[in-house]
Structure formats: structure tokens, C-alpha cells
Image 1 (cartoon, rainbow, N blue to C red):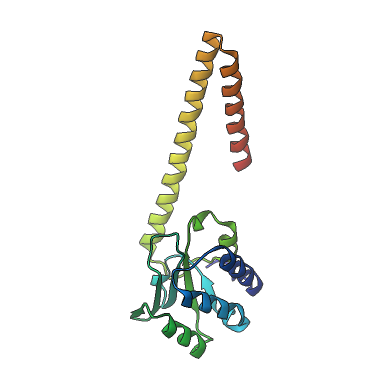
Image 2 (image 1 turned 45 degrees about the vertical axis):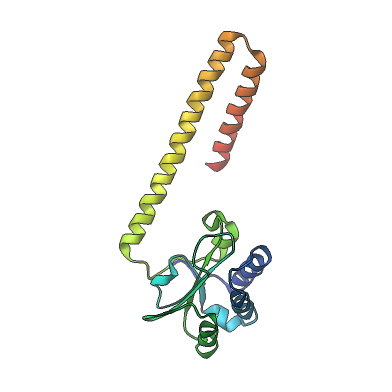
Length: 186
């Protein structure tokens, strides 16, 4: 598990999250606001992915994603009753709580990345699948970029052959922009 996220970073993330997203269940807003008001409790809260593998966890979803609105897991117990999870938070403030927040593009969100931690309870085969998926996604992105570059170069050559100066200039500008983006990402 990577280094613990400071409480201030968790608070900043939660404030950001609550300002931008509507949750499927209003009780979830209450729970997250309660966490904001209780620093001791927030020290034991960890935002992570695949929280259902954790011994004590909540899954909370926003309205724009197609996933379960709310789940609470504790040991072998699983419930959709948000009030039970709230009472469990109040009664056991010293136990670790793992929270998975389902919202659009969470994997691309720097605010989420600043507050998220690795899930120490993920089975090894899931970690391997996740790494394989990331490698496949990078390979696909590189392939699309390469094919786009080749297509642009071909169209630039055609524009030169046809004497189409305007098309040549616009395609060259597009190719140069793609190269700049690639250099920025590298």
C-alpha cells in the first residue's frame, strides 16, 4: 500500500467531489459530510478501487455512472442500507474503512488520484489482470497514434502531389500538433 494520504488531502478531495457530483443516494452525501467533520474518523478512511475485497468497505456511486448506488461490506455481511453503515462508522471509528467512489472518468481524475490509495486486499490475479489491461490500453493508444500519423503523412503526400496548398498546410499543422501533444505526454 502506498504511503497514507494526509487527512487534509482527503478533506480537499471530499469537498471537491461533493461540489461536483450528485450521488444516487442522499444518505451517501450525509456519510461523506460526516467524514468531513470528523478528522479522527477520516484518518482510518481509505479511498480505493475494488473495495468489495476489503473487510470493511463502502461503495458509493454518482448519478452519471451505471453501477450500484450503495453497498456496505463488513466481513461476510453485505447490505444496501446506508444507515447501518453510518452507525457502524460511529460505533467503530478506529477500524479501517475502505471507500470506493464510482464516478465518470475516475481513473483519469487527478483529484481522485491525490486522495486514493492502493487496495491492500486485492487478490493477486486481479492485480495481474489490471496490469495487463493497462499495458493493452497503452499498446492500443500507441497503435492508434501510429496509424493516425501514417494516414496524415499519406494525405500530406497526396496534397503535395495534387498541389493543394491549403490542405497541405492544415494537415501539416495537425501532424505538428499531434507531435507536440506526444512530447508533452512523454
